[in-house]
Length: 135
Length: 285
Image 1 (tube, chains in turn purple, brown):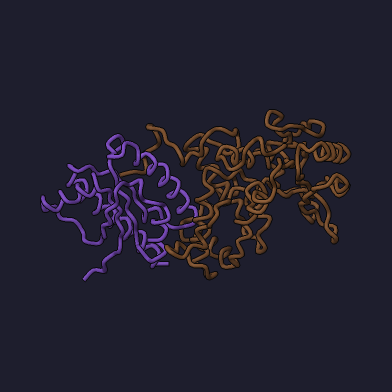
Image 2 (tube, chains in turn brown, purple):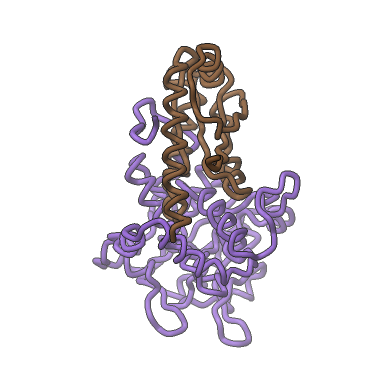
């Protein structure tokens, strides 16, 4: 059997989590390499949490929230956007492959998009890890 | 110039405007160190030369000084220190009426070998901002310094991720986790630093390559959008890790993404504490 990756997904309760739920209800197929952690808002995702995941051996991290303007708390995801932009920048500079860290907006009605994103993330993380093991 | 500094210090200590004056002095080995002057007669200890590189704004957030010093504090600031001061003011860590700012015109500081610090070679603030200072001492200098083109950082960026990781792990392997970089930083003022928290333990305290990498990522991230590039961390580092490169990389990222330069004024919020609806989004799926 193919080796499973360990990807941590931080999903906001109001959009992405419901979107992932819809993907399940609609029986869209996607790889089971992702572990979902439900958070009240993507703005709750402290960048330290992302770093902790990498430190404890996660292969990849995905932070997913509502589309801009749709945040249940009005503006949480705007802060997320800035924070994660800088974090991605910084991780890249230290040589942590940027393909291992992803951010996405998935609404409650985008079950298909969620499945597609997970497929893409798993592909990307897999490719990044393959490069590391080769060297 | 030193005469004027002494005169100003004597005057504000004498008339009770300030109860403490922060300046530069010499220790018994002849090295320049920060001095804390409480009495008029001690102003003779003040010095001003090309080794006064300390960023004295660091002491505004010092717990002991804040606890035991009631009266306003007088301080010598160079143009670069003033940027840190502006960030502290914008973050409400220091009250403007608690300090008397004596701005110094500076034409660059030199290290023990007699070379200019790299930050001085690309300095854009030889003359302090007269609006913020109570007094400015020194003749205005017209210096055309080299502009910081971030070419050393571009060189690192040109490597592929694995090479970059290798490069940094070579540096971080040396890190002793002495936290000198944190202690000297004027903007690292948390009462309890996350490296000392153990529940949750964000980063393990032992000095291993892996732990050090995450410590330095966290340190750099906490300074993103706040660091003014004063370079004290790099100078204080006993094992010579080029910390300023990391900070400058983030200074550039913040400048490019949010059009923000920390220390430009004392009002604007740090870019990670606010947002714009039309922020860049090309990295999001």
